[in-house]
Image 1 (cartoon, rainbow, N blue to C red):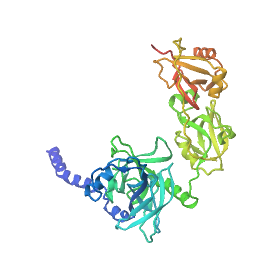
Image 2: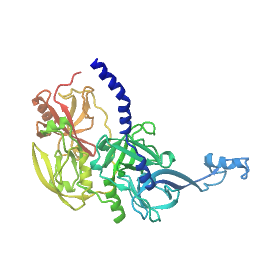
Image 3: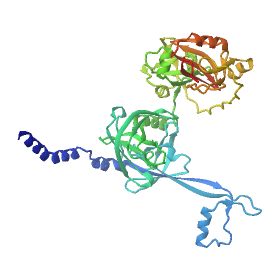
Image 4: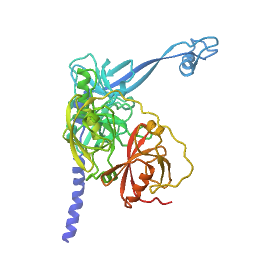
Length: 476
């Protein structure tokens, strides 16, 4: 009977428990009322000129359908006539938010790129013409200014205090729908995205769509913690993966844009790659961490400091480099000209050096990597490669003094090695051996125990990289 009474009591209590859980859900109404007025809608107009006149034969220019055909039929020059310049307009929509009462505001650079005219619409329906104070494409940030006073502004939070699973909220203009509010949680922090080396993105599942770009991401205290910038999508619309620029990064950028008109970033002149577990094992590193140097710029800051290809940068300016993506942010955020300490892992031990940070130049286009024809079938070595000694011409072409050229790679090889690559060295159990000939290489492979992880130092085109592979005989 006692068990029955307990079950009866729990059944009576269940509806009240459900009500309590509903009451524990966040209420965003007060946040939106207080912070919404500082969020703006941004529209842009760009003018371009196209030659030719519309082919609308037989239609009087005064006919209502003439305008329809003029706008939608491709323009081509008439008989015996050259191109006739005409003006067109293209509009884009985005979001932004006010950071000072005198009209400074933040948005994404891609919202205002190539715009000839920018219009900002406030929450109270007032519209202003805006001008770009500065833009930084590397972080996708832009500072705008309108001529107004006593404007509502946002409050700033600390992104470092955000916790995964914490509620966050976005306000913006997706697809042009002003003052749209969406909410979700922080999915991850410090995300690295392809081609985005200077921003540790905040990942959320807040519904973000075209038009939300440049809008604020709030925490539950009504503080801006990020700027909604990108989504991951296979359809062009929201799929649950949204990325925001941390507000501390944005505020540092806007400060530089407003004071000096551009963003200064540090550089040390190295090309790096991630340290996998296999690479760490091959280089004798206790755990996979740091940034593996696969190229050092000749005459650059790193070379002057003594950095070598094959070094693993484990600390920069006293901060641990947990992942290779950490290093560009650390270096980029360092003032050019500063002398900072750096810790390296080299040949099984740590070394401390100092590097004078240079200034990052404009982006350069990667060089084209030519392909090679596959030679006739030859016996492969233990790893499944066919290699030959470097000729004097190949040494000059690849800008190397030693190494062996890969002629062929058997289909059984599971490593990113390609015909045309030059293997300049091999690292195993923390020991690195420079390769002088194909005979030396094949003999060295015969001395390596089966299932030992080895690292190949490759020269591919104008780039250096490291590839790990097990020292076992491939199976055909």
